[in-house]
Length: 232
Image (cartoon, rainbow, N blue to C red; front, top):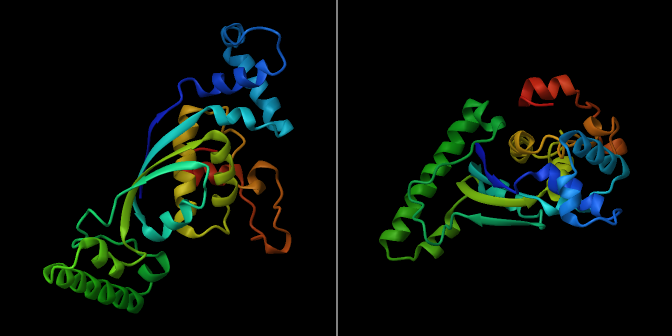
């Protein structure tokens, strides 16, 4: 899996702080913008997070390139509807040499891996046969598995990203989209450390799990996150 931040709203921390401050200031937006030092931005964004006032976070967005993930993951990802996605098309791209994502549970079991590889090989062969028979790619793709690798570009605003991290960084999230969520978090933290300082699963951010008896019972620790994901 490869995740790279392509671009983002310039000065995202400053944009959010300015948008929020304008709500309570008689001054023009330009004046508010010029008056925000990094220290004041940090102070204001901390207050916004503590109040749960996240609407100003919608003014900044982040565009990421995501590759080496499965169609199973992308089907989950697009359920986060306040975002924009552009995905490699199986209608226009010949998938005769498609690569797959192998779940760790399969890769860790020799018999399971052999069975997985056998079925994937059969799908490769069947796809190629349909293409040679003149079946359009848009119809031959009906054979392709959820394991088929894809790549996409995703644009999401900061508020939606906070929600994404709260749900998908959780240990109870499916393993592949959880890995994606932590990688995305690491990328956007480099661009906007103030906005995403209090991001991640609820057990990490607030010290408690909202899922009650459905929780995993293993709350994240900041030291663990830093060791596993490079940023706390």
